[in-house]
Image 1 (tube, one colour):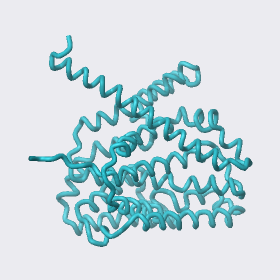
Image 2 (cartoon, rainbow, N blue to C red):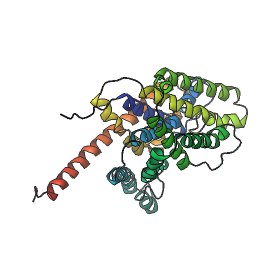
Image 3 (cartoon, one colour):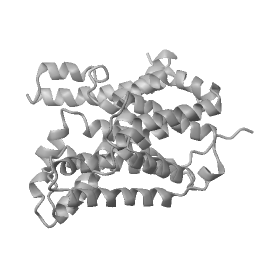
Image 4 (cartoon, helix red, strand yellow):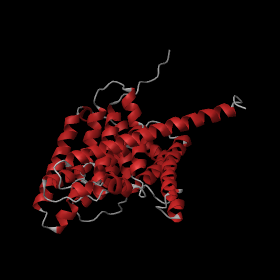
Length: 344
């Protein structure tokens, strides 16, 4: 008798952590929080260091899971509907209150073509071209595959890390590189990779944060370091960030955790958390108008306030996405019944 494969929760935990990283970074960067050389300022700075690593991990997860299965048009349609739902609902509410123009409303009704969400736009395009990428993954010679990854890594990670240019780099190109890298890990596992544990990634992330803080503190009076320290090591295509991302990904991949339906359900809502809180029309509303963390940077309880706001945004986004899935699930179920002649 055939049994369905149990979905392990190790990478679902990582998916949740990655979204928390992203929300934490946005709480400071989109919240307009200043980062002076104080305890609170340094704490806010630290909160920015995981956001781009979280983006890397999301794409690695997509490439890893997609490498051995076919991406059907229904999945792409489902993702597009999810993006469109958040974009248009946010815009309609703000338009109703007179907060945005008709032009902004129309642009929000076309979220992918107008790049309302840069990540979602790149992600949908990645899914559209994934059949071609899968053909490459499964048919190209392993040595050629490895050489291409090395060339892209040097051009788009090593060279930019030294701030001597980034030839041919784009967010879309970087997503393709991450997708192919995850596919290589999936298709060609090694004993060394299988021995990597979560501690490797945690140590790498800790070192990244320490170096970033030291650079920020000691370079604060130098405009270049003061303005760029937050991304000097943590920009998604830097050697340090991609190393940290891959080590965290591999560590959680190798982690043996039993299936946890609740964790899997929360992880399945994380993309919705992103769509809810990072639409360009609502960023300021959430982080500046409602939460206003930037106005409390000098208060003793600022770190607690920032942490609670991050958790709050994540939880609200999760609940909204869970409700959206239930509502659309019932609509889809009713449509299926109608098509089968069960509802008149």
